[in-house]
Length: 184
Ligand code: IMP
Ligand code: MG
Image (cartoon, rainbow, N blue to C red):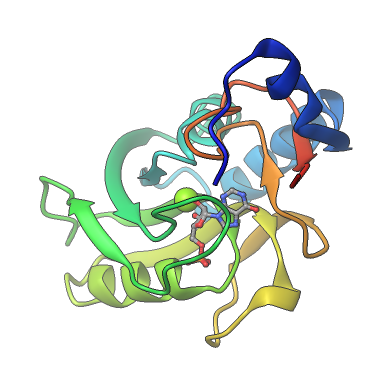
């Protein structure tokens, strides 16, 4: 993995925009309405998986009108560059009891599916009232375990993507759109 050491190098790694800021905005407004309809006034707990989903959580929580709390978990699967380690580690857990909550996991991307499969299995053992998964992006062609999100805003081909929370080596999370990363 090459280190980024100039603004030129940084810009060159943004290959092309896959999902625009406007497309994200519209999809989130629609998803917010679907979540409202699904829970019909019942309070929900939005659980964001850090770090990648922090931008999506910030927008989706403002697109729902049902009473909502937010919480964070931290899971690591990509330790280095663009290759999955195939090994999911929960580095920060929830600090609350979820037995009386309708939990909605908010994720940036489902790739191999391992992270969410593990997190869903873990949270189910804690007996929430219900548990659903909303992901911004879905890369179904990369799946190695059987996992389906309840809601996926965009299905994308097998490219490594950056922006809107997603990183390459911790960079690019602040891009307002989703772009394909340029491997050199
Ligand atoms: P999974 O366990 O393979 O489904 O993916 C877990 C995590 O890997 C995701 O939540 C992302 O944080 C990260 N990831 C997967 N694909 C990409 C990508 O294309 N760009 C950036 N991060 C990714
Ligand atoms: Mg993630």
